[in-house]
Amino acid sequence: MPTDRELVARQLGREPRAFRSVAIRCPFGAPAVTEQEPYDSEGAPFPTTYYLTCRHLVEAVSRLEAAGGVERWSAAAAAEKELGASLWAATEEQRKVTGLGIGGSRNPSQLKCLHAHVAYALARPGYLLGERILAEVEPRWPDECCSRGE
Image (cartoon, rainbow, N blue to C red; front, side, top):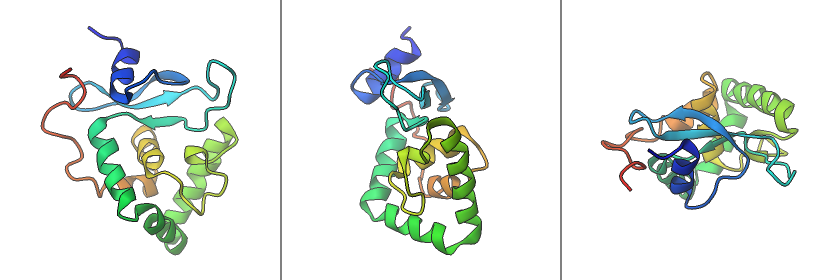
């Protein structure tokens, strides 16, 4: 049976940097979101605390980004007070860990990576902006595990 680290390496196609643990598993038991150390093994800052590893979710969120999702969700967070407040609170929480916002963002009003916001929402339930982005992923989970069959 492969270790979590080995499964994550398979999912990513490379060794994970700054890997701490699996934060969330998919319904099939495979890693879906990992938690990273604030610094990698060489001491370099690692800006992403929660990292999306489930291939199904990574591909689905990539499609959202390709369809203009970063700009659309940045605008939604600016226009909707509740979404903006959610982003602000999550950013402040994240800054306490890494000094940067979600996904390493220095300017939370301009989202950088929807993957990081989805990962954060899965790992930290209650993050409204990330949960709303994730709600666009249909289906949330595939019919069978996208990571274990190798």
